[in-house]
Amino acid sequence: MKQHSFGHLPHTVTNIGFGAWQIGGAWGDVSEADGRDALNAALDAGMTFIDTADVYGDGRSEKIIADVLARRGGERPMVATKAGRRLNPHVADGYTKANLEGFIDRSLKNLRVDSLDLVQLHCPPTEVLYRQEVFEGLNELQKAGKIMGYGVSVEKVEEALKAIEYPGVVSIQIIYNIFRQRPDHLFFQEARRKNIAVIARVPLASGLLSGKITRETKFASDDHRNFNRHGEAFDVGETFAGVPFEVGLQAVEEVRKLVPSGTTMAAFALRWILVSDAVTVVIPGARNAEQARANAAAASLAPLSHEVMEATREIYDRLVAPYVHQRW
Image (tube, rainbow, N blue to C red; front, top):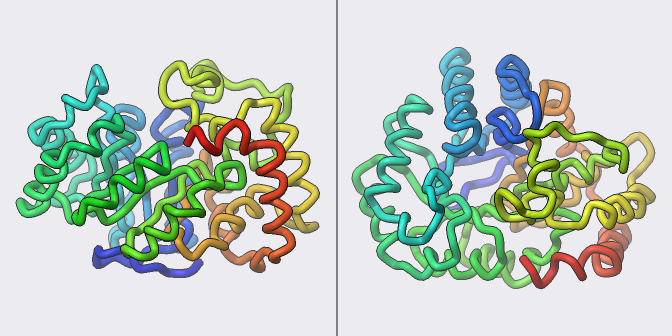
């Protein structure tokens, strides 16, 4: 895995990190033991970036991370968490300094640290990005030493572009994969220009781009691929990258033709993301140690050819873009 500087922060991270949503919840039955094994395998493979959130398992993900890192000792990886989704209702008026400080204090306790490496607003309502006082509050929390830096996790390209107008924002987390190619236009150009760290999430389109999901695949009742198929619980773009399930399966079969012999589709999909030099780190999740090791290994694949990249763009334009491109 390559090492990248993380925007304006004094961190260096591997280009493949560990997405810790699965070990928190909303992905069916993932035991704490499997979650610990997955994280340990990722760290053993050399990953130096972990992404979590305070709502993943109501703090379970953060607590597992804290325990694993405490047991391992040694140099700590960079740990990014998120805040804001604990608000109920989740509305712009809830993004006050007091509320955010309360969420940050809870994460500090869960992660057993004195200062958070990075806190990200967790897909806030768009209106929040037009409230300067929210970012002034984060500046004050940074000066107080509770956070080293802050960023924003967004749903839409337009939100990303708005967020990086604030000089204190050091990172943007955004969905970017073969089925969500729009960020690699104006936003990536601006991120490069401003030295903004880019965290690419949902890299496998909730497993679609693993090539293992079929029409017969059954998802547990507590798996968002079951209960959020149409955006019932949160933005539908987080589930299968917002691509209608049947359309996604059709596009997967087209992508499958491009995957080299001996390479998994998941590894191919991760390597596709790493082609862009605007991406600082991609954060695939893992339910077990085997998946974590496979994610890390994707970095060693040969670069994808221009012809292959063009072929993925054609598949996207023809099958997927009509459903997602202008929506996110």
